[in-house]
Length: 279
Image 1 (cartoon, rainbow, N blue to C red):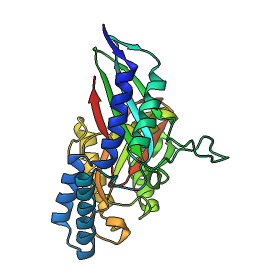
Image 2: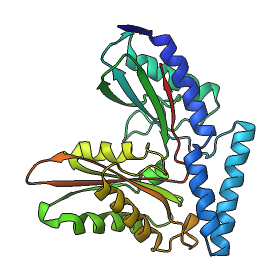
Image 3: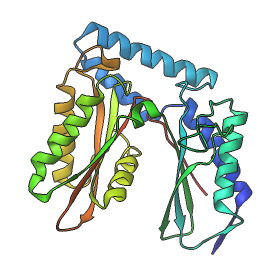
């Protein structure tokens, strides 16, 4: 049994909040560079160059890549042989509070969805808990901006809608989003489970590197097919046209009920931020 004190968790979450907001993952950088090399439209290529310049400045100066530093989404994979000494939720929230305050990150969280009063420190975090084998605690901080989050949708498809219905819905969501989520985007898709679990799967799919396909050959092929279809829409970087509307389509699945086919699409902008630490 490994014991982890909550103060250590707070320090790690604090650092991850700052790192995630200031440094784009290497897989996203690679995907942008690859798309730029293949982009035949001058305006689109120029915009991709500006995106590279932007995250280069963020890297060098340790400043946020985007002014929307997001709602703090925190994924916790807790080993069943780990003992947390103290209040885990409070520790995560304190880490977010310190990270967003000490890192001079924009605080975008309101306490109530209707009265809209800002909490002032970007807490509480949105925390996802998962109990896994082992004696480690894996923490992933994924700040989620709402320009892209607002473009996400879920649909309770009928089993008879089948694969064609899934494809049509994914394409419809991206087409309706247009330039609003600041393309090029990453498209997370959750299939199966229940209404809420499909949405979770779609968000979790955004954590998978752009250059890693689904382990199932069927869904791997579907990811590539949908990426081609999405890029065929011609929305392009920032909506100015081009072949680069999406950097990747990541699909995650779960078993579901005989009467249902839940499908969730969670869109992220090109600033698909996430940083992970393991204790």
